[in-house]
Every structure is written in structure tokens, then in C-alpha cells.
Length: 200
Ligand SMILES: O=C(O)CCC(=O)C(=O)O
Image (tube, rainbow, N blue to C red):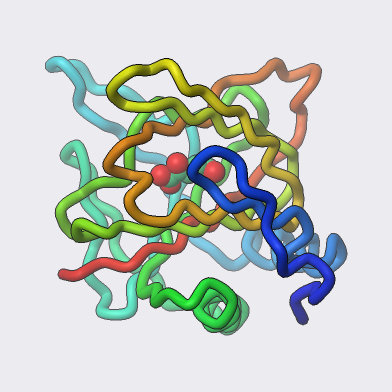
């Protein structure tokens, strides 16, 4: 698998850098099929306002030091890095000149599965949190809005094989979400690989 060297220059959208064809479509498809079969995709529940809710997507977690990922009383244990993801991590580090040591994987069965507004600003990510999202499968929209004013607002179409880089200090000032879409317009499955650098 090799990165498409024609699309190394990102498009700047709000506080993000978007690389439309960071992976060739055929490479991205191969990777998606591998991940569908070789990853243990877990359903999870979170507690909010005293009620337990099923998380509307499946997840998996990988970390260099095997540390688990925990949030809202949910715990994901680290799975081993498949060679293909280890390779992607190396390429990201070369292209973005940043280090990554963990990856949260999200699997959205179709447009009905989603992720609410949040920032990736957990203390473990440090004050300069940077996150890189590789998208595989069904195109989905990522919405971004300013935390304070809620006035600046962007929508980014995350395409098959794309890379969205969210550099520091974006997580301090912006929220992002992957909203629900209709089954008719978004029938397919999407996997996102969200690479991070954690300090615990
Ligand atoms: O699936 C996506 O692209 C969004 C992922 C995300 O926001 C996150 O993992 O924090």
C-alpha cells in the first residue's frame, strides 16, 4: 500500500487541513475490508444524566503502551496494531511532522449511526492535542463550530481515502460532530481511524 503522492498539499478548511485522496481509492478499499474482518468491533454504553445509552457506532482502540481508553464510564482495551495501521501511523508522522501513539477506530453501519458535538480535549492529550482522521467507505459530513461564539461554522465532506488533520490549538476552540444522515442518502458503512498522541 502506498500513499498517493499527488495529493500531499492540503486544502485549508477553517482550522483543519483536508487531503482529499491521501490514500488511493483501491488502497482505501483494501484497508476497509481488512479492518472489517480483523478488528474486534465493540458496542458500548455511556451514562448521561443518570441514564445509560448505547453508543450509536462501534469502536476499537489501539495504543503503543497498551493503555486503555476511558470516557464517560466506558473502557476500551487496546488491541494490537495490525501491520497496515502501523504503516499508516509512520506515513502520517512523516507527512504531518507529528508523533502519534494511539488510534480510536469508529465504525458507522450507515447514516443513522453518528457522533455528537465534542472536542478531543481530554487531559491525556495534553495542551497541544492534534488528531488525524482517515476515512474509509461511505462519505460523511463533519461539522465544526466555534466553542465560544458558535458563529463560525464549517461542514467538511469526508471522502473515502481522505485525511483530515486537526492541528493544535483547534481542540481548545472548536467542537466537531458527525451528524445523522438518512439511510436513503447514506446507506453504506464508514470506518474512521482517528490517530492521537497521548501522554499517559
Ligand atoms: O468519525 C469521525 O470522523 C469523527 C471521529 C471523532 O470525532 C473522534 O473520534 O473524536
